[in-house]
Image 1 (cartoon, protein in one colour):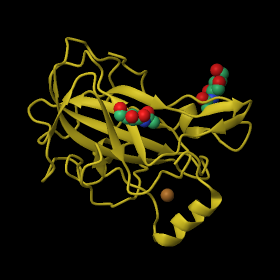
Image 2 (cartoon, rainbow, N blue to C red):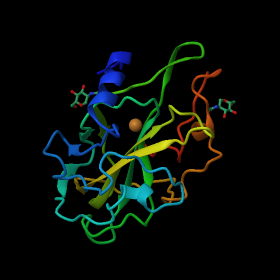
Image 3 (cartoon, rainbow, N blue to C red):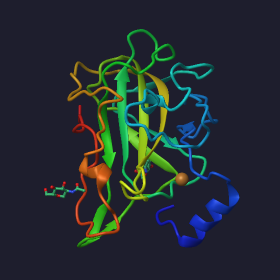
Image 4 (cartoon, rainbow, N blue to C red):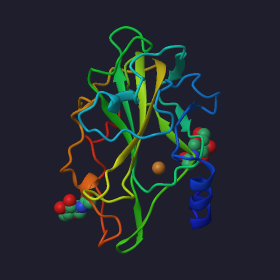
Length: 222
Ligand SMILES: *[C@@H]1O[C@H](CO)[C@@H](O)[C@H](O)[C@H]1NC(C)=O
Ligand SMILES: *[C@@H]1O[C@H](CO)[C@@H](O)[C@H](O)[C@H]1NC(C)=O
Ligand SMILES: [Cu+2]
């Protein structure tokens, strides 16, 4: 769904009490097959200092989540239960597990592999890519091994500081095969990668909104 209509937003609010969205499916598979299940349902994380920013509340380990093999250079997707309808950027991160993806809590280094920011088809008039499914590609030179792949949609529809940006995040467990000897950089820790002073966090998208910088590190293109 490219454009979210006002009617769709109203319908979404009417149909779910605390209506948000959750990226529960990887490569269009069953919910939570390869995505870690969290315990706050479709609610966002808003605390910039919380470990919950890694893989959502209750997502510290794999539980019954399986790990899927993905070839370096191949394209995969996360799908949400309902299409994203709060404006904001989407980013994808990866972090290598010291042992298995299932056992990893995401406390190590993360690197970013993709950003989807707004476009400005006309000056100071943004278009957001609000979808139910978002694609990403595992960089070709990613070293083989187990990783968490993390999707983050940062909802900034209620501008800071009156509103608080909302992080919609999930982690999938993957084993990268056919990879290379790249050195992913720059790396960040989560929490720590996002500050309440980031322009992409504090911006008011309804007021003189003419450019946008997606929060977090630069993308590693691998
Ligand atoms: C997502 O990936 C699939 C498979 O590679 C491709 O057919 C589709 O066009 C992609 N969608 C977007 C929005 O990039
Ligand atoms: C827009 O660009 C200006 C000038 O480079 C920069 O200072 C500002 O932080 C940017 N705004 C956002 C929301 O990224
Ligand atoms: Cu919401």
